Length: 120
Figure (cartoon, rainbow, N blue to C red):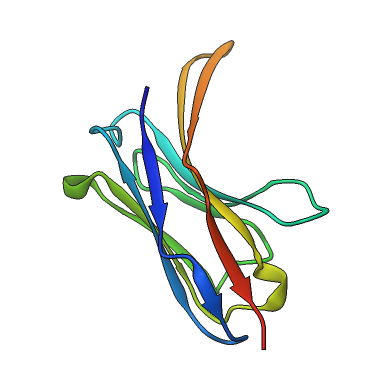
């Protein structure tokens, strides 16, 4: 099973920036769509951003123009650059590796999560 390890979370003031990193245990980028999700207290987990094997990106409306997802295939890593952070971005952020084998067989691998807190 693919192992994912996130890093880069922390405490930042509104308007600040953070860069999250996700390191994978194997070469997965030719087979997996990578994504960042977040889970805030009292809210459902939501997809923040994703990037496909071909490099197509997708963002939640709430982060468009502020967050950028990217990946480094040589390092088996995916990143989330977060700018202009807002208090509502406070959450635990999770890295996800999703592989579609068929319409009825999809696997998801998750990291342990990293806390992001935006507060003055």
